[in-house]
Image 1 (spheres, rainbow, N blue to C red):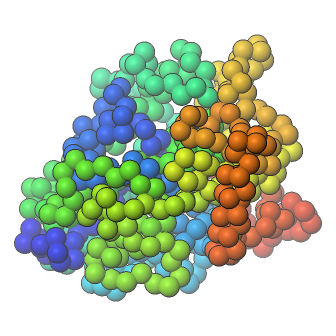
Image 2 (tube, one colour):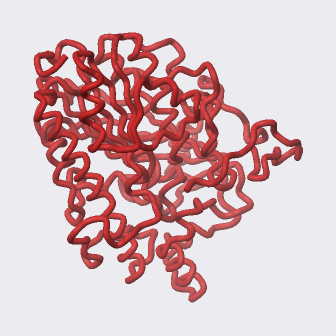
Image 3 (spheres, rainbow, N blue to C red):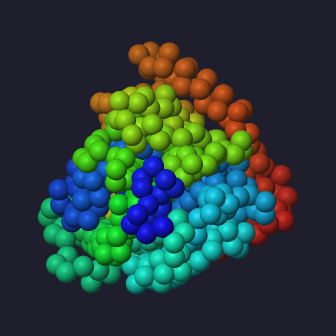
Amino acid sequence: MGGQNAAAESPNIVVFVADDAGWSDFGAFGNRAVRTPNLDGLAASGVVFENAFLTTASCSPSRISILSGRYPHATGAEDLHTPLPAGVDLLPAYLGREGYFTGHMRKTHYGPEGDRQFDWFSEETWEGLPGFLDEAGERPFFLWVGFRDPHRPYSADAVDPPHDPAKVAVPPYLVDDEETRADLALYYDEISRMDGEIGRMLAELDRRGLRDSTLAVFLSDNGAPFPRAKATAYDAGIRTPLIVSWPGVTLSGARYPGLTSVIDLAPTLLDAAGASAPEGFHGTSFLAAIRDQASPGRDYVFAERNWHNCDEHIRAVRGPRYKLIRNAYTELPLCTPADASRSPSWYSLTAAREAGELTPGQARLFEAPRPVIEVYDLESDPHELVNLAGRPEVEQIARQLSRVLDAWIEETGDFPPSRRRRADNTDRISGVKFSQKVPPLEP
């Protein structure tokens, strides 16, 4: 295809996927402390989706959901590390039928049924790009780049110079102390390292004359690996940085304010390639918003949390201003994923709890029993610290959101809480052993 491919024809497609990056931790999304010049440049060449959301804040279920165009509970792989079942096609299979050469770099997390749907694989990222492009030849290509940054554990040598802990942004649900700031600075370092790799890959596309014929996407699979973020239904877990740059199609420096869900990404990329999405997809194309930022966004986005180091059954619906979260297992505090609960930020929270120094918002993390329903006004409370459920001023809003959530559960074939697995692979209600083994914890 080369640089002669016009945007109106089937574009090359590259999708960059961060591993555990919060939506606001990039320059293009307002963070002035983190160094992300290459992603900021990508944003300046395309469209920044300011209100984009994932279907779950858990790694493998999120990636499978994005690539399958189905909500996690409908993929058969809604739990962390559960492999994709046979018979479920992912985006590369559909694009392959359209003549695309498909490739994957680094983190897959789908299992063998998903892995085999790509033509090419490399453990490298930018170092492996020349080989992929050489093998693609004149064919249009689809490349999914699954970074491991900024997943824990962290080291002190990710970038030089490292970020200054004094300049990081500490969200109010974490303790603002020396340990938490140092933890966040190391997290910023890994984001910056990933940004450098993306810059080298974009430079290689430029060198080969391919950038003008390539639709580039950047997003994260879930929120930052900190308490009350990753593996939650709060915006810190399910909101994603989403950038789309398509030379000749996207306006430079455009920003799209409408609600967007990544359930729509696979049909959008098929649409861009001139193909139709299959009937089994839950999402629809948002190509119109890529071309015209005045296009209306979604009325609602939906998210879920299932097994991730421990079991949960959480469902959420979010409109432009209000969100409703429904918790099934309320007897214990919110289950924090293993890596976040071994972090310095977690230990600062537990120390403050023992000292009786937590703020009311921070104490929500340890709340037990938890409320069945949570309602948040995201305009006045963007960090979702004050649960408004039960208050007269949001009663009608809560009822409407609950009806919308019930309709989504019915339409997408969601399962009830009684069908959940425990970590020992038994049904939490009946105690019956499931046939499929629960994979080991994420490294």
